[in-house]
Image (cartoon, rainbow, N blue to C red; front, side):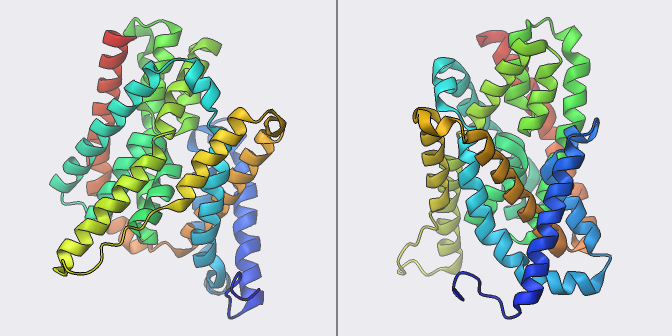
Length: 338
């Protein structure tokens, strides 16, 4: 039992679990309100966790379990989130959206990373923001951060950047809709290929009606599907980079394989192809977001505000420029291919 819950002070650990759960539940409730839906449940839970820091005594007690939550709960949440990815819908819609998603993700992770490095953004933070903006927002940041062994401040800053830019560009693309000359389905694909969070894509696609919403979801889920392979590739890359940096080329090459990403894909397959599980999928997805909300609150409880304020401008600027690029790229793909 002690290995499952390795806490020196069980009472303080329970305070941390209860507080992060409360932040997640309140975040879910707020996200259902008009206006807050664009910000999203996960980001709201993160902000609530940061607010708790104003009470230093409670924060000190809660931190007994926040490391455990941010690590173990993250893996469980990502695995359960796999049930949201319906492979049947993706396959029935054809491979065009998936092919477009592979192209967008590959191009944009590369561009995001090198633009961030041009702005002298830290290597890990550059990768986190690149994946968050290119794949699926906060969930991508959290999934990739484990493979990269990112610090809490880096993960929080990357999530904040994704949330801010995703909300801004959701409003931008909705404003541009009448001027694009796209059908509702085409506009939905553009939203799904360019916007950061699933909530952003759904919100923008919804402005084009049910057809736009469906197209946005399919295009966005095609990008979500790439989270697992990208996490594996970046894990290998980072292991090689650290080995080369240390100069110890004779040591055994250890790859930090994110096994929970395999669970993500297995959950997707189970939810997609086993009819008996289908009725439970909405509940499992709700649990996934509840757990991930706890993870975000745990990160918020550990964020260093000084680091965020000092390091935030350059990665935000580089990611904003790349958000313009991904929207332009999505426009070009839809115009020429869809």
